[in-house]
Image (cartoon, rainbow, N blue to C red; front, side):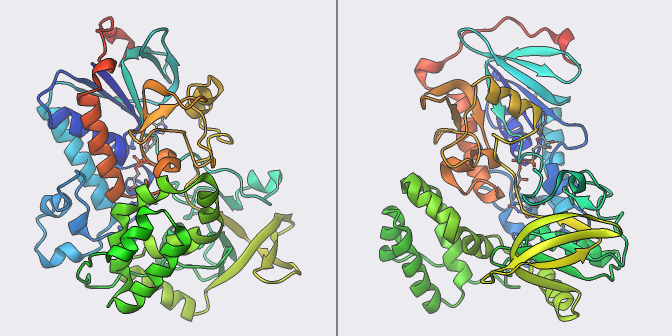
Length: 465
Ligand SMILES: Cc1cc2nc3c(=O)[nH]c(=O)nc-3n(C[C@H](O)[C@H](O)[C@H](O)COP(=O)(O)OP(=O)(O)OC[C@H]3O[C@@H](n4cnc5c(N)ncnc54)[C@H](O)[C@@H]3O)c2cc1C
């Protein structure tokens, strides 16, 4: 059985490693990823030295059931496993695992290409088209393409969106380096991306003022230096989780967090339950969560390393970083800079400010209906994939299988990672993704009896470099 995995970031490379090494298998696994991005994608390959992981090293093993894998790979002492290490080290770990899988297994092929189209073949299977014009057939395809390219920020005019004063992808090499040290910056977004940006600007000795803007002006909370002991959720809170009652859950969490030594352990204890909690909510309740609770949940759930938090505190205390709750109404080019109309939260009047650079830091883009990603555009226009009900990504089943417009499985097409978050919400961090990868690997290895594939024609190797 031939499986093609599109995207060689964390999800793609881990699934490929899992399929190629864990099982005694006759699977033929082909991992296709954009050059230079194997093993890490944006999060780890593009990370600079100052960008730290937002979880402790001892919890970040790539494989489900082996949380200490990363710490072991680094030979970390027990004590050092609590540390928040540079993200680039994690990229090296993922790449090393992939190389080892390539060396030891005979059924894994890696291709440095972009997949631009995937056609569904009559009957079953897919034809995968690469950016060099070559193509091959595959029984199964797994989309592990990560988040989509950034869309233009609402309020940013077309002229500014094409101007170097607008930075849509701050992780892209050279983007922050070209900003003048005295530039006045507006950063839209106050989450972990903004934190990364400030860390890099600090490293470069940035002197100009930075305003970071988001609807609620909430920063990620900080981790503690030493992890508190885990707690077990009391039956009452578990009941509210199983009932998918958001209001009752919020009240129960507040009560428990007041009693616990550290609220963080309550949030962490809820994580394994959250995917089912999300699935149990009606579409209206999910939409309500996104509208009202999401910023609070995200600021408590996606936390920053203590060292990073201290640096952000210092930058704010120095007056160089100001956090503003409000909305960007409009931004455009003026002679020597950018103007921005901002309405602060609770105000009716808008304020006009001037900046030199506007940076987009609004987090992961996953709306497939507005994307410029060629493959996703192609699959959407062919009707092979459809958006989920809330426009969070691709409509998929609990087993990561793509669903068509009638809610029927698109046989043999799977999606894993940020684009699948409409199905379970928590699908962007290592912790949740590794369980999903494990389940998908098991499913691909042993498909339901009615889905066992018949052999395809041998792969035309000449088509693949
Ligand atoms: C800056 C940043 C920091 C993060 N830090 C953490 C952290 O500390 N801890 C944590 O748990 N999570 C973190 N995350 C969450 C992160 O999303 C996951 O940990 C993980 O990296 C996601 O992996 P992925 O494989 O789904 O996506 P990616 O790592 O983005 O990989 C997707 C890959 O697919 C490739 N691709 C896309 N389209 C195609 C195509 N058509 N053909 C071929 N290849 C294609 C892309 O180029 C990319 O290399 C972070 C995320 C970001 C963005």
